[in-house]
Amino acid sequence: MNRPLAIIFQLRATRDIERADEWWRTNRPSSPDLFVTELTRVLDAVALMPTLGTPAASPRARGLN
Image (cartoon, rainbow, N blue to C red; front, top):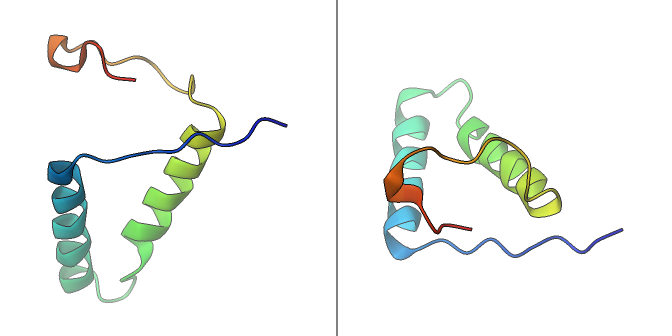
């Protein structure tokens, strides 16, 4: 089995994730951990299968790996 790839976030993305998590915890008290749980699940899948999904069509995403 292949080793999972490391996923590294830029500082801006890290801040966006933190803000989204804070919003979720504030506005969804019945499931405060769901955002982090789902994000972790998706990142684990991408780390194991980096070709998962469809490449972004936006020209702004050109060159992202």
